[in-house]
Image: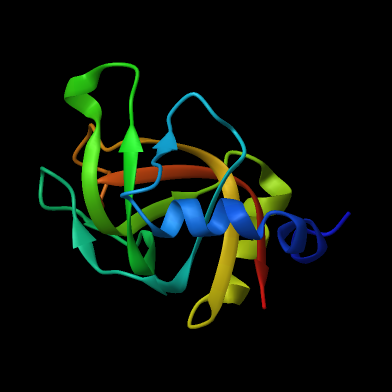
Length: 128
């Protein structure tokens, strides 16, 4: 099933992601969904070296419930996305500038290479 068709069934999940008062994404789930406009940012790591992360800007704030409460994110409009899957990683660039839906596992930023409060290792990406 394509991500678009699957998301028709998961419309409620998108509403949950987009409305922090109702529910937050969980760092224990590999199936969280986020929607937003994808861009490439110009950032620097702690040593000042340039980096070009993919940043998803959400239309509504998202939040993250983490196993360690100190890593929870109350509200953010940005998610740093990447994919550890070569095939998905190769697709991300073609979606820059578009509104996309992504599915994956979110977690709290914890290094100088993370450029948004939530980082998501995505397993799917699709525009709509």
